[in-house]
Image (cartoon, rainbow over all chains, first blue to last red):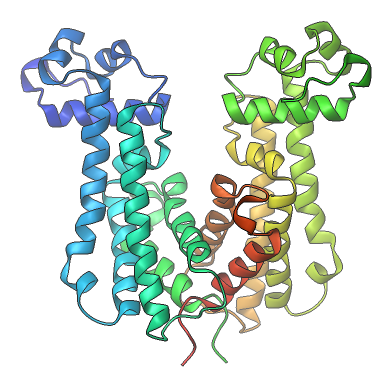
Length: 196
Length: 196
């Protein structure tokens, strides 16, 4: 845990410490006292930067949400056949999840007890729907199988991607974000079974 | 929550109440007082059945583990080409997860703070290895693709299956265990993309 000197403290380092503490203790279980101790600065210094822990939560999940929604604005997510756009989005979701691992982990653990949490859940649902729409478009274009319900397929694909936060550790075992993204794309689009 | 009369109380109903409370409050956050209130019986009545909450945890996760390991002893998991056995095991994992949803949910949330939790994690790892071995055998028989690392593929497939506990609700939306098992098997083995 960082023990940055007070005079080098920035809102960004405070946010990074807060996200780590939220992920370890749970957001509900984290007090300003915990944040103050983990950051090595006084509570009043924290209040100099933010109004309280809910603002830190909002900034943290916003960062994850902005990265995820940003994917949908990228050229390869907007142009081309739906199945190709979907494949691109799935790959980029894995990359964002790994590059912003603590922030996405926090986003995925949000439970809905506060206004900020309910807002984050709503935004997550919006994102899920955007991806489900892409899957629907790919089915309409005849490129994906239609022998399973679209919503179910989307949930399972998100389940696989989101589970990565449970075991992926940067630098652990030499598995790179690219390796994981490749495996997810191959599995989701091609399946395990070798083509006849 | 049940408020069964004391004289109709059985170890089985106590276990079922305990699993529900553990899943709601987390195992660490559950006291004997919570269990006593949820079950509507005194703490000493609970101690009549078990030595404490850790024994309830052990019984609950044992039930889930026994069901999961039981799959591997079933005929279709033992006889035939490895890819077919793997497909059978994946389907049955989904079915067990849904039929024993609260028990498997608890098993998946175990963290490792007590001896029982560490034992459960160890047993889960054993099960994961058994499934990973099946995948390896299927690759050796030439039936599954080998362009992704086996351990990574296993983790992703388990991630997809385990994520079902986060959203599946019995009777919700008319999606049956069979629908979910079919979708998982199709997705995992065939992938989303329609064969050329």
